Image 1: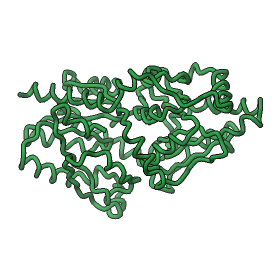
Image 2: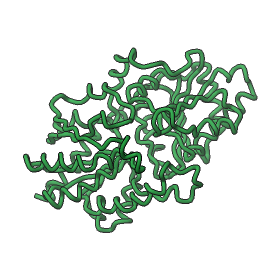
Image 3: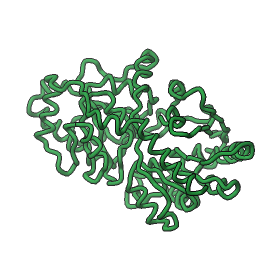
Image 4: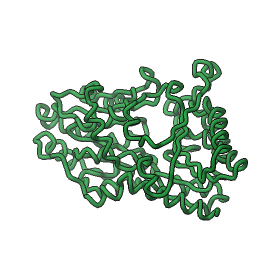
Length: 403
């Protein structure tokens, strides 16, 4: 989303990334349509997962680490670069920043799109922890300080992530930082529509479909529970009317296709509304996501019970212009952003009104909720071009400080 705009702000970018054939994640060739042809892209190898999984190492970051090192070494020897920017949630790769800084004297910035080393799951039962949590927790605890202590700048979707890191590592308390979310990139909506024939339809056209696409997890139950509870009461009040509604939760697991564990459907079963909730654990591609959001009647954005959770990928939801129901932890910065756009139905899960949820369902059924034109100032403020401007201001500050 930033690549089309870096040059407008005085930066030329080259990308180093994994050759897609080494990844087992959902792939979307259409993503390349929004990348300017002028952008140089260098692909690196990775160890075969069929080999490394035998010793318990399936992470694409660990499998590719050596190859990233070799490729970027070669690039830095051949030409002059001003900055290395890590924009990935495959965080182990970021430890190479400290190595390249020491060897080549080049500063680096890490974009913390999610927490890296976190104690969030420490007091959770084993059944609620991610796979291989014991190993990942200890690995992250060891690797994070290597990367963060030597960083020259931090970008994050959450001010809480930055504050936590600067508190944990006082040596970086004075480095430049910025809170920058994923921007709204309107060209992607058109790409999704123009290629809709490539994607299978996931929604029931006979239903009124309320859709969420994104990760699931028990940490979202507090945001989802009030909605399920209100919907159950609505069914009991007027079954014939409200039984036309169906909730979709799509792409809720990071596990390989067919291996994900449902985390939302069990909650629906607790409320006795499982016949009105569809959970698809398999991830879908980015443009399949955008098309599905555009085909929905309304969109649901549940937040985590982690107060630092930002739901930074909310902008595709808002770009659709569809009616949105959003429920977050009251400390989440997402509430303010969504309200800026002019979304009416945004709540914190401790204070959400069942009456207001009933009204949302009724207005949706009676077609009183229409596609919406959101606040133009907010649309501009959170656009990808403005987010890129903020990135480049941080880059300039770091490079100018070192010159």
